[in-house]
Image 1 (tube, rainbow, N blue to C red):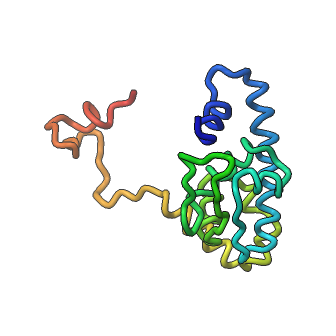
Image 2 (image 1 turned 90 degrees about the vertical axis):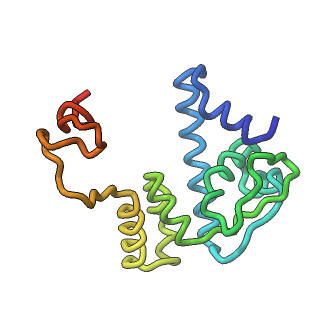
Length: 169
């Protein structure tokens, strides 16, 4: 079984003891924060190695590194083959700084986008602009006119909005 599949079965188990799962995630978030703090200290250095080598480098087990690689993959300049990863798979942590910051904001990971290392990468105005840009990108804006309860439903059913899509569930 590939590492990622093993990690996801363990980390997202529906049958696992809730306390054990809570401890797993608490430990993971602390280790994740430490890895990011180290990576962000030298943000222009592209770190590469096998999954096992990176786990050893950052002092974590292979499963924790697998979870980390899963989390950072969308922020990398070139995605890693995380679906097929094994311990000896060579991976890269060469991340796009702006994309990483915005993905941390998107994930609501204030313990990550609030790391002090970001202060040396982006000034306060830039961090605020990236934060706003990310938040705005997920805001749904309705272009059309407001639909009132007695208006025809915009879905085209012919019913009043309140009796169709506007019905409270």
